Image (cartoon, helix red, strand yellow):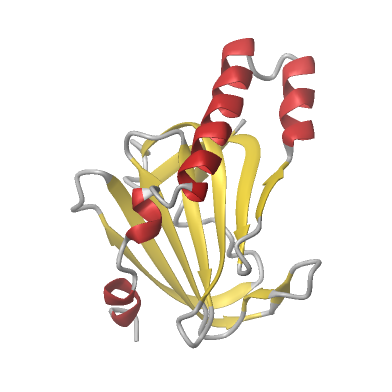
Length: 171
């Protein structure tokens, strides 16, 4: 399991960026990164998720077992939703930055609406190696099932957050 601070995620080939946080909502923490200068990050299907003037929005629900990342292009169009299933979310005591404890499994919503579940094999491998407990394994699977259900039913409240007000703060 890996503790991930949202101020540091998905910035490997980013040379310059601006970042803002919103700690004011009672249900979630939010972080927006505007990429100023970066080497383009293109996934297997040819979609570019990170490039100059793109955005990465990260939402960490306070009472859920996942973190949500939204990749947005320079025209402020959503390219992809990416959910990391987590063992827990919170504020790191040392840095004061929101974090999530990555529990291997990921859920992606592609631009065409297709839902994909990733890294279930990594979750099973972690269980087999004793890196996680049976309870953690079951939590990840149950969270994934409930998350996919909320996406299909269009009831995921975090996917309904008005993002433009945050994106505009970085322009």
